[in-house]
Amino acid sequence: MFLALCPANNSMPVLAQAPLSVQDVKPLVPTALATGDSLFFSMEPLASFRRLEARVDIAPSDYEARWRAARAALILGVIEEDRERTGRWLRIAVQHASEARALRPDNVDAIAWLAAAKGRLAQDIAGVREQVRLAKEVWALTQEALAIDGNHALANSVFGKLNQEVRSLSGFERFIARTFMGGGDSMKSSSWEAAEEHILRALESEPGTVLFYKDLGDTYRLQDKLDLARTTYQEGLAAPDLYPSDPMWKEQMIDRIKQLGR
Image (cartoon, rainbow, N blue to C red; front, side, top):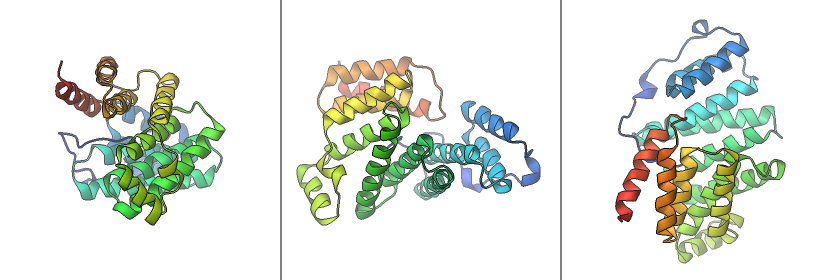
């Protein structure tokens, strides 16, 4: 549902690789975190995850390593083609994000990463009933995060994407989810306006984030605002790659533009 990604063309057999042992990683916190970040932004999310996982093995209460491990696992789930591996990575992301939040319950980053991981799990893996349950949890988590920081980029992105996903359902599907599956506020209160507003707010907070352009363009496209969608996709294609999933987002935007035609 969020941080939403289609499968990448170059799938990595990520889970088949042995994790780093504790001895492979220096226990110094700055070294572990800096290395994890450097690998992640060098488009090596698996190496980043393994470094951070080794840090967590020797320091389970390291909040900074926990949320970074959640981030890396989430991206690995997003770019993985195999459904089973995707599910395993996303559940790992939820686990690390949950641990990060347990360490710092009021930290907006921990809350937002947990929302993102659960949202992605709902979109890619869960069955219908679990999707509804996870959507309710994501709704509550994003509301909590935005109450702390209304301009938080990830929280706004996840909340905007949730609104987009719910509004993309038919009225009958929303009725069934709300009435018989306990869909709650996520089904009753969603709107296209909220989808646009919050994804735009995410872009204002972190300009140039490729995913935000894709999600905003999709929101316009789904409402038949085709000129706005095309322009937004083009802006996303012009942005530099920052996250390991960005090349995949750009491939999707290129495909969307082709589908829109002239």
